Image (cartoon, rainbow, N blue to C red; front, side, top):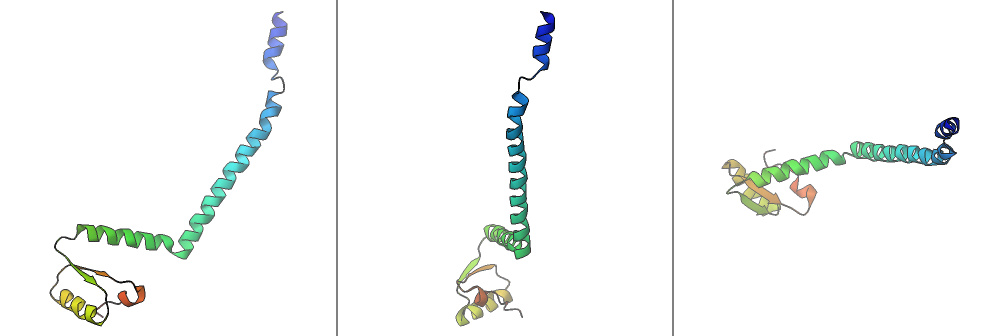
Length: 109
């Protein structure tokens, strides 16, 4: 009787064979998820998107920290004159411009 119980306890009754496909599926799924995230992270790094996000976050923090600043809407010809005056008088300001290429030039150059 004791010998029969010991044998039953030692054999898994086929449970191990039934769990094997689940284990293989979990391994394949885990490796796939890691590969997916690694590919996306590599693409972000190569495209420079992370640098752009970090630049925007830094700019947002600087804007939040500004007190008593001037908001310049548009960096066209009139806006450029206003920006040059603000730079000359060392007043804090923020420029809002729809056209990124137009707003990216520095009045100091």
